[in-house]
Image (tube, rainbow, N blue to C red; front, side, top):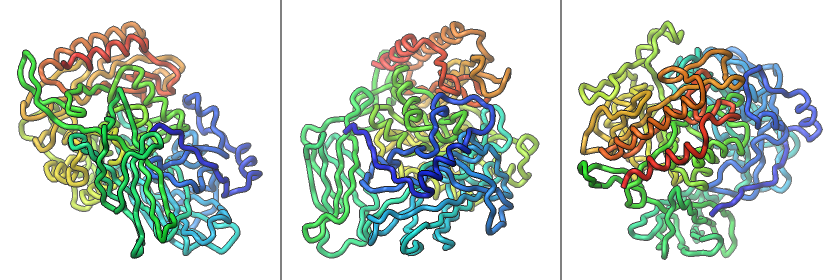
Length: 624
């Protein structure tokens, strides 16, 4: 199913006139480079697409737009507005219109008003925040409705009891975000950005929205295909079912039903099952409804795909190796390290078209995989991967790094727990960070939320709980925990070294040229990072006259491209001797890193696209 998800956007908070006035007062903050999409931002219609593509309802209300904001001491219980911020862009970003940092002893406040549509009368109203970094406390009409910790997943409150019968409703949010000065997962965010560490992201950074639902409703579903048995198992989570209610599940092919069943845990045989792959990303429609006394009282539209990710043994003239397989066939997985950062929106792409752009280009460059590096994207990013056909390795955002007190400004206690050095590619004497129990429990909670929110996106084929020993702890237990959350994917336990031989993959990093410094026949061997060929493109850099790439910066495009081609030829030799996947650093430049296939503003592609596609395709096809 390839469909364009659209909806009528009801502008509530402020009147249309107020939005128009706000637009006149809003402008991007700062003078850093920006993408072409930033020039088209309309504060009255920002990120207007339906945000939950796997579970679509017709009625919803988008709360993105201009909100009042303030920054206060963390202990403050109220605030006075200092100006307006454009949601859903983080306060540090240019597109927020603010461009201010948030310290670990400060709070970021948001406030806006909205009106509940008259057609929602008698319905429960759910308030969704798709992502807020890191702790969000929420009030409606002065009543505290709840608090959530975790910067990468959706959280929802039923705000029905807190709504006035009519008129304007007031929504207020208080955010705390210690970034790298505490135990929270934060990926590559640093309060003192440099090198491979980037500008922090605080506050609301994904869509805020509402929807009307009945007391009895569908809250989630999960579809898992078995291509060998030609069936799909679907488990439906439904709230407040009454005796006699019927949960109906249907699988359809472009609108034509191919299977249906009743119940919250159903197994559907799919005749002549169509498989999903990068070459043929076929999607089935999923329709779920609750019927009471012959009347449908709730329904959602979604989709799924049928595919299998596994490890198989394969032989060639050099030996027998473990290989990654898609749909029971060995496939060399090859793609870029994708940081998912933007010069204008930081964690948040300027718009859905921009979000899609990076994936489209990755496909056009000839890759079949993306490693989403120590960051989690909005649901629509994974939907585009499903629709366009690209495999995804999903990292858990790191809770640590290898830095010291002087360069980070962290307390010695935080540094003692967060910072951890490891021996790259080491098979001997792996080490783990000194992580307190409370930090570990938060990691498990947030990792479980991430896996369970995104595991229905079939493009995801590998979970990566740790990278380069950053905050790595209890590795074997974490691998077991990851498998328990989702036994259908492979686990890459420790990308870049520090192996405990607990997952499915041994992942080596080597810069700049590809190399496999170790081999273990019991596992799939992959080159999880290499490359990083640097080249500055004047007028398209984050810092004027500054930046770096692995192995230095190339003087011109021809030199960079020739190096890339030489690296792909080297990579082919490793494919023949057991390498099952490779990740090139990286999709775009990122702040001071000038090692992208594209510039940070996405305005310049550094290599000839046809040459790039030919080279990358030849690597994938070298696995026979």
